[in-house]
Image 1 (cartoon, rainbow, N blue to C red):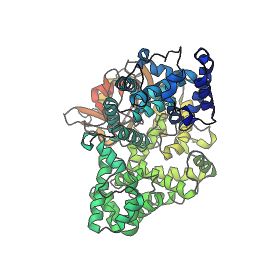
Image 2 (cartoon, helix red, strand yellow):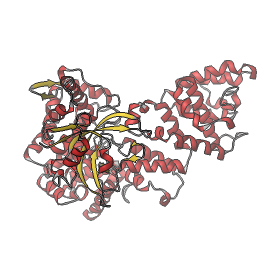
Image 3 (cartoon, rainbow, N blue to C red):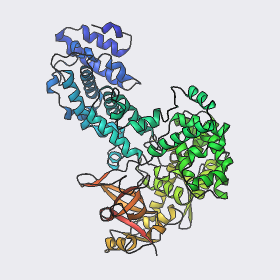
Image 4 (cartoon, helix red, strand yellow):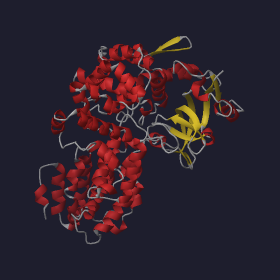
Length: 607
């Protein structure tokens, strides 16, 4: 039977062995024990893999006798989500049933009532119905409903998707990777995980058949010279002429520009030429005259950034550095503050918090992470994301400062690292985060390290401002936004509740036909109301209007930064935001002007 191949002394194996040996009338007495132990095992690393070893034996053991999962023809894909959400032994039974069907689909279990094709079709429907759990989109709706916390359901779906090919699910994964990558988020782990899953799904397909081929190449084999190991690759580089290294640099640069993804081979290459042939750095990190000029004028500084921050773990910052070099912000003060970041003493509380969540145990690694993430937020400010945290105000402020006041942001960060405190003045009173209860982060996995450090402190200040501005008879952001953002926010303010000419005034101040110079004052914060597909209000949300312009079809669109990195969203009924194909720059979302107006509830305007 194969049972004894897997026999060991763990609790699940003991319980399952007892169930296996029990006579049919007594099966019910042992089913509960097996499900209890399965539920425990699912909470352990590799629990699914361990349980899957038994999947072909579940029916023969009598695990599902007299239970809803007994007859495979009565199973309904639409009910899987609900039973997974139920938790406990009910969810465990659903997982075991799905693993059994996966074994059938893979030909590892010949079921008397279900063919491999039928099993594959069943699992395909399950995955298609639950693609949101599989992909875990960072939408306001998922954040509000805390869908992201349903990790166990996501795990079983990912496990199924990686072991059972489905072209429909593959297409959904490709579309999600494409939509996410084009937005150039700083945190790319989710994209890399989806690429890995899709690569497993596509195993056996011809390269030309895979729509994800360019993403797979960017992650696993970005150039023709790449080998299986980093050591082999570096040895090849040592024996290359400048001509071949230039060709290699250009290929590596092209994959970053096309996908926003960075492989470990980018790290090996950049660190090698930075040390051995620094005159070739421009071939991987520059795209235009501004970036070439910045590199030529500040080569020692750029070389120091590479040495101090570029690691395999921080590789995304190579793309951030490429984009940073395209910005005309390399002033004397900018370089001074950035260099200070490399040596600023770090407060003990910050160090302890860092060590509690990261695997970097040394000051050198912490410094590398700090510098690399600052490169990312300054190079790609629209890639800063709030994850599943309700922190859109503070996340928006970080993007705003990264775009408009990079020196000020660096000074704030340097002071914070020393003092573990941020101070912002509101109507003449200093509000210091060290005197307030820090905001909490519900989700630390989907945010960058600078957000991890600063957002709890910024949130505490923001909520203190809300308290002080409460009860004034108008939306408190009229006073909060100019103070919280520190500089550059227009002093005029209108909200939909107190302005009878609200929409007309927005057109007056923001439509290019009425204000041709509108883009000179942007970005500006704006408040919107988010709805789900049914038109139900999910709540208020904070975004930045980046610019207003005609798209390639001549339609006036509002291009905006959304703290949700996953910005391709249904905002209400049929209105869906766009992230590419309508003139968007990297990281921008957009809507036609008239559609965007439907969601605004508050905006600032120049006096």
